[in-house]
Length: 267
Image (cartoon, rainbow, N blue to C red; front, side, top):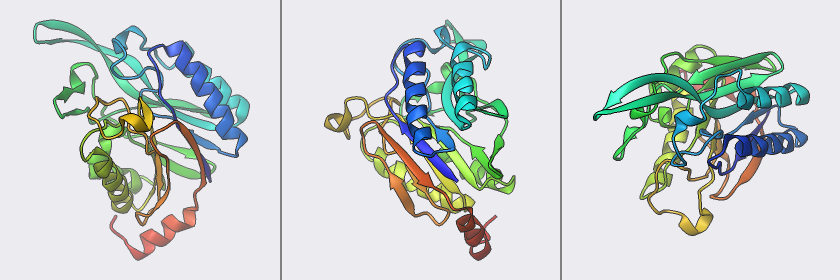
């Protein structure tokens, strides 16, 4: 199966981000990709303003805009966005929380996965503004079962193992990873470990690093570190981007999953 990873830097405006996403999806499709994965927060970058102000449901302009393009191109697109969730009280403030969602849209589907593990770490509390999801999601592309996780989920191996038990041969991971000391090292280890835990293909699409290579390694919020990657079911890194915007197109052999699971039956 031909997959495409779109690594870019989203901005503050959902309309501009939709236009950028559409252009990049078209480019990946023109290079043969049938499953195209965009980053977490592709509809609005973290640290660019209140997420609830531009949050939309699956029938809103952002999701339907990508859905129409996916149907036109005959591809399946996975893209990070935010949906309205609930209202909570935090430290005397009333907050309108959102769902951190991976939109999954294509010729025969238009569904969502909501991030289960919110990023409450490194002095950041995503749960203040994001309501955690509760349900695992898989879907089919060209006869291949694909599971979904988002960013911080990758630190929780059982989610990936359970997706594999439910038939996932590929697990896509839209991401907006934070930069800082040891963060790239951790990202590389975690993506390889989750591939090994689940004996699945890991397809992780990240936000490019704001400021690019010049800012590399400096501490940041969860606004992107680049390094989108494809990791095989034996943990080998088959492809990896750098810090800058980039598109990766890669062919995934499901025979590799069958072989790995036969020789290493960890599930």
